[in-house]
Image (cartoon, rainbow, N blue to C red):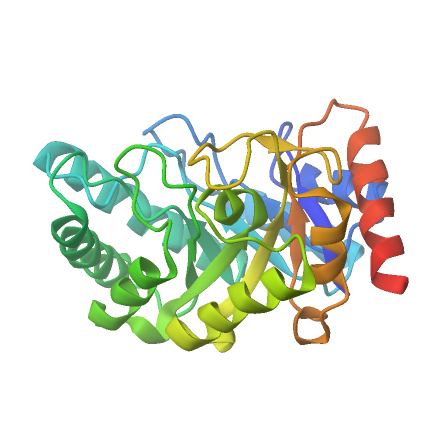
Length: 282
């Protein structure tokens, strides 16, 4: 079982490994840069060496990077779309340089242009960004979204459509966020609801595309279309929903990371991870 958390890179990319080891994590998600700025500082050979050595000391565990929140490859505004393409290409080059296998990304917002038009624009810009990056490795994981506003990716159908249209579908997978999918109308609280949700995922996308989980409870009610993360078992999904997931043998080897609230002492992560580990053993 690979279970961990998103960790800060404050002090350098390599510091994320010190933090994940402090909570005995065996899966990790990071940003490779400041996610709230367009400017991307270059990765130096020294940065890469520090990262590589720290990773080896941690162990041969799965890791993903998340791209910048500023990127919107579905934008109808050409300047934003161009900046997004450039930014996403650089994100792909960074994960390849760091030997990180996955880049998690939100599928963008159509900004009022409509879902189908947004998806087509997203795929066009995504494919261009992949090609412009010059990378050969690195899988793009489309993250399930909560369905707020004009955001794409809140239904399995939308994610399937993106994969279908892309010229690089071999490099596309899915990151399943429990908070987001619950907010979008996919229930996992009972065994019956859980089975229905993942049967639909398998039918529309295929379980082989599911490569990463974000484990987050939610502050808002089912089908709320609101994205507000909560500690495991303290939100509307509740303990039973996470127990259903943690005991599903199909996903035992798929990395799972927390994105729940926390302070610098990481006690919240330790507590949430302990709850999830106990569920997996029960």
